[in-house]
Length: 336
Ligand code: PEP
Ligand code: MN
Image (spheres, rainbow, N blue to C red):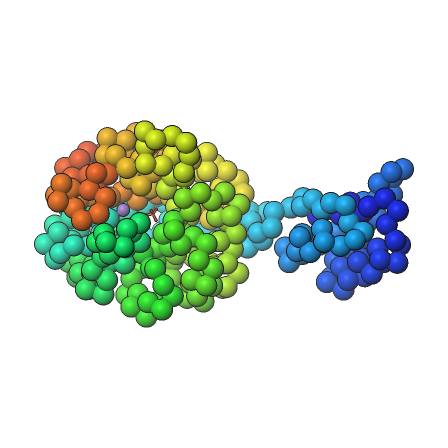
């Protein structure tokens, strides 16, 4: 980080400032030019508050050179993180496909979909019990009854399960859940992220609807810094001016994340597009761009689905997509 000092800054005030920064364990490097004096901060600046520095009388401007995230940063952790889920792994050459309905609706629906997606080669099962809905009048999920049905489907198929958490107060209910999903709308629910940092379960952290990659990595940082290293990122499309698709899949997020961070990243083409026919091409694009997995919504009867029917594949459509997925994952030299 560098601090640009104001012209004619009071030397006593500058000493006070640099003294305080030294007391934080930072090295100070002065560079005095004809018109400008620059103070370089050497060391871990993740805890330095830029805005606080800017508020100082002697400071003209502050520029961050290194990223504000440390635990998620590839610079400090060059090797890819491999997250284990049951006997499966994700990241570093291991590719997983999470599939299942948007929300858990009934025993029949959940078991039928679970068996079908397993048959097609999905390696993890999804289903929402606590649903974040835009309208308070829309179906909110079966909540604890839904979790029971999801765990029943887990026992019936042997597939590890992924489901969304909406509040840290529900954590006890998630004891038998294999991967806890943080939805796009909760990506910056910092209290929830802190609590998830205290548990050891894998966390699937979806990107917020309108969040930058840096903000997303800062949210991952909350979980990692709390002591939970098991974070999987999920790109699910962001808000743009485009209206042809539900969101815009930011395919470049995959190589960008791979460069900035060691965390695995998967792609959710269902929420990214909102349309079934776009799931396959975007799944293929995600694999080609280096994703470590996919999350796809599948429903046994999309026309009657209580949530996201328009983007949910029928089991036979999913089966066809999986054929392509398996071929391309093998082409990339990854294992499922
Ligand atoms: C979901 O996975 O069902 C979901 C609500 O996704 P998102 O948080 O990405 O909108
Ligand atoms: Mn959904």
